[in-house]
Image (tube, rainbow, N blue to C red; front, side, top):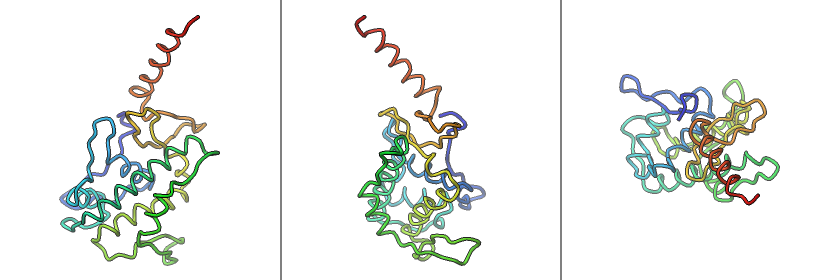
Length: 197
C-alpha cells in the first residue's frame, strides 16, 4: 500500500495505542483486518481479536474474547465493508441487513456527558463486546466528522481494501493508484486492444 493508504494502530511502551483521532481510520483499519488479496485475517480467533482490540486502545491488554465475540466482529467487519462499497454508488446505497442486526445487538447508549452527544458502550471496560461497540460508535463519529461517505473499498475484486477517499470530487476507485489503479488501467487497455475493430 502507499504510505498515504497505510492505516494501522501501533503500541508504545507496552501500553495500548490510543484509537486514531479520526474515527474513519479506525473503521478502515478494522475492515482491513481481512486482507482479501493475501487471504490473511487478524481476527479469526478470540486471542487475535482481543490482541487487535487491545492494540488500538479499545480494551485492556490481557483481556479476553470469546468465539461469539469473533463471530460478531466478523459480521460487523463484513457489514462495514459492504456499506463502504456502497459509498461508490451513493444514490443506490443500502445498509446490509446483517449489519443492521449486528449494530442492534451491540451494547451502546447515547450519552450527553461530553461536549456533544455520543454513543458509548454499555459493557464494562475490558469486554470485547465493548471494544466492538466502540468501533460501531466510530461510525457516528465519522458521520459527525464528515468522513463516513468518503470511506470506500477498492474496486478490484481481489483487493477490496478499505481506504479514505481524499480526492476533491470523491471519485477515487482504488486503494492505490500505483498498484490497483495501474492493474485496472492495464486490464482496460488490453481489453480495448482485443476488441474487434
